[in-house]
Length: 423
Image 1: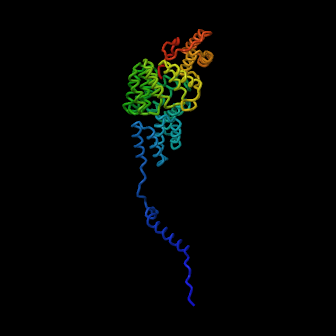
Image 2: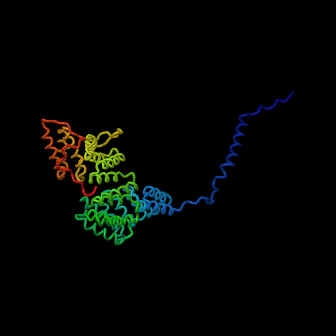
């Protein structure tokens, strides 16, 4: 007759407890952090102008990559401001990021097709890429929109100077135009970094080195932290034979941009020109350490080793430059093409042939001389060294002997290739 007690549903109890725990957690920890709809957030979005100011300051400090990142953050917040794209593109040209600079200059033009500086910075990027026809068209449009802009005149000086140096572009005689534009640049924009840089560049390539130095120094007064300008000032000092000041500028350039191999490369060439062969080897090796698969740098290192009488090692490095191969870490090195326009490349091939001949490997040496005759027929230094190798191999026919590498007593080539005026 006793009534049976109902059984407890423990599954339902567990579910209820879990639901209570979830509601308690949400109430205490989640809801307090949720923004109430239609109520302004307590954390204000940062003004894009503050990013622009920070980017300008970073550029002034020579921190180009950080400046670029900061400009990009400003664009993220305010993507419809064409002036930010222009400022970003300008810094990207200074940093050697020419493709990105062109894209951002064109992004600015999408927002404002009549912005003269967008056309101008686009032209500057195209100039650095070697697209002289497109650069000239952009500069023509920029000057149509703003004919009295000194910075645009500076970019025109760079363009026409490059045309003259490389014997390329749409203008038959570009140098007078380059000179006139560089003069107009410093007149119209006396406080502009680009204006003094452009004027210095034109003075340098027209062999007015002392005047070029003064313009480079004026540019450095405006911004002392641009590695490219220190590098070019060093090249100018070297051209005048002032090696100690050249090395100072290369060191500054390296400090400002440690990833650039050119300060090491140029320092090695400056040092070898005054007989500091051991130091030249060290700098050449440092350049290779920063870019270990670059055959051009291997050739430079091999040449410095040759000058320091380290012939077995020189032969190894020059072989890697000429033939390619595998470096010390197993990385592949592609062979350096033998092309005209850079006498250094012919120098690497010439001294490789000389070392092969001295090592009784005349069959290989004469193949290299044939390449020199075929590919750089107008290089007088290469032709002289070809004759030397042929004469040396004639002397060795039938009487092979081991090279006296490292003794410092080998026969030197009949003509040592001359250094070009600028590295």
